[in-house]
Image 1 (tube, rainbow, N blue to C red):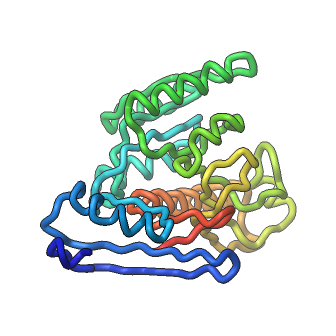
Image 2 (cartoon, rainbow, N blue to C red):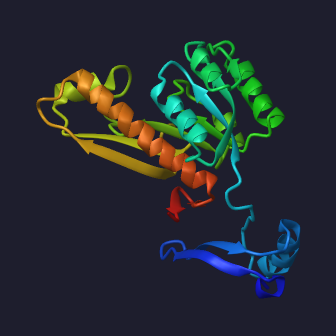
Length: 258
């Protein structure tokens, strides 16, 4: 099929999951044919083998909304990487439940949408967020230390296109000041997990994890700073791999073709 359209395979990765019996493949090709022509050629083959598939233009920037609260390290890192051209996303808006990071968004020339959330307004706030996703034609929503729990309904609506980041102490050290709790317990590893958002809080399919080793000399403030650095690294990699269509869902796991 590809040769008939003057195509050439430039990158190919595959994996057969022995647990599920599913076969996964990511292929990059070059071809003078249009995307529509290639999709029309693939469709009969995909139907024949009951394939779940998608086709996109390599290098196209993915339209992205970034959700924030007050912590700036993750969103600042994403905005900087986008500006530097090292992250294939087009951040079309920053949405916050506080106005703390509005100046940062404006510094990068991004529209900031203030959507406050209370127990009484949570439904309206989530409806407003979904409205922004549709209006801005956003393909990805990144929770960059957004300190609100998404409802099961919103999590379902954003299935496979919302990424969250959190420290990897969970389920230990829940709640406020986790790094101070970790210091009190003498932890030796500081980690972060980037995962897809699901209705099960912080238990979605894991895309990336990162870790730094620490010792007894680290203060709570040092642990917090190290944790922020680990979080931004793990999140940036997860967003890049998703935007490059390198992450495939395999039930509650992911296949990541790096």
